[in-house]
Length: 419
Image (cartoon, rainbow, N blue to C red; front, side):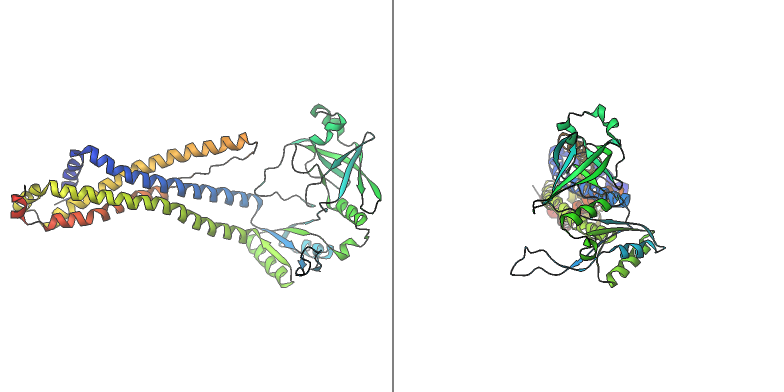
């Protein structure tokens, strides 16, 4: 018996009870829809994260100073740095042929009181963290530049637009403010104050923090704030970003810096950890749909067992005219597989459509929350489609094995006498 000789009667038998077949198929549809939607979410999020990391460059290495562990008696005490990120280390890294860029960074204390003095008035401001050379954060969309430059040069400030509201300036005035002389005034807890001259170099849309200050200027602020002219000798930089020429070069730089005793973090290492986490997440998400498919397989088995009882005489006639038990078994297995495959096709299609709808809804909600994020969070890949259809057909096949074996074992005379 050829395959087409089995498919035709199998399809005919399924259409004989359309409602029952449809209700049985719904279980498979729900399971496959859940699997496709959940796994496509994992694929989409993973691709967006990989794209963000690749945009920054997996060749990026972060270096941190080594600090001694906090005392159990006073865990909030300021920790002493035992391995500093010094200007000498910057020079060493810049001298390497496998290094493209070195960007040291200094953080200003959160308790530092700073005011912007302009037109005889002062407004309290808060700096946002930035490095000497800007390497973008893979998970951050920067604010729009309104005038001037985006990265503060030495002696220049990049200021957010809301900072100028108390001074009465509007967006149409921003172009004329570039190059304007202003002062940053620091007020120390010891009761002293010091004014530092700057020029406005750029104006951006609002973000966390009001001003951006270049690393050399940050050093000057820290030296005065801590009353420590040798601040770098005592504390060094807070962080360094190193851009290598290739992934292999980045790995060698990581090994070299680790050998020197620094805390080193590579984006490639972070990405590998993220990918492993995403695999676990996709497995957990897919297991939800698998449970639904398990319930659906019971429905298929029940439907096929009922078909065996209803078609007992038909099975007896087929055996009486020479049908082998294997052919009977194959007929019922194919019917069960067709139910699974049909549910898989519909479930995959609905899962793809649901992903499109949810992706649109997520972007609408993000725009409503004024979060400028664009991307595709639900991605139905070709291997997901093939896997979903194959899995659905396999579930149907396995669910039909017992009913098919029961049908194949029926004795012809008992089947013909069955009422």
